[in-house]
Length: 160
Image (tube, rainbow, N blue to C red; front, side, top):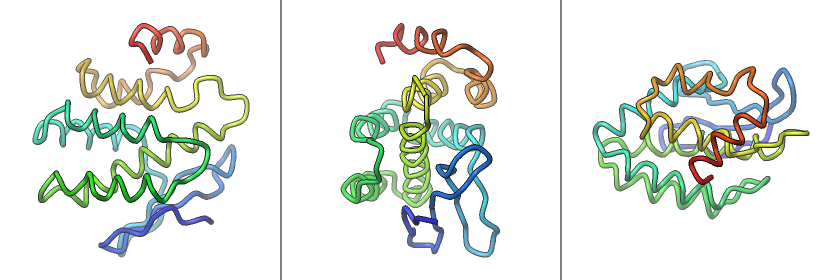
């Protein structure tokens, strides 16, 4: 399993085989079993961090990552995330891990076969949580079961 990043607390972020492809994102925290972070959980964490640090700052940092996301992991982007996270004070490790999870999730979306929306799906969820007052549970399930054209329109309306 390719390791994406090891964090200062010993947490490890990696890609591995999931139910559908080899692009499942897994996080292993110290003394805890490996698990795939769920959209609802990191959207909730994003909302909590936005209350402390501001939605605009988090979204600006997310967009800097979004615009640099391709189908491959970039050490430059991971380094950028690490340095961005320092601006969040005591929450730096939490932000480092969260933004890295979002980055890995977007890479996974970029690599899905036949995916039409790619990383735009993550951007939509982040935007909904930070600016549209959607609950993390709603944002996490917003796209499920909808035709890609409907989600594409949602993204286009928001200019992304």
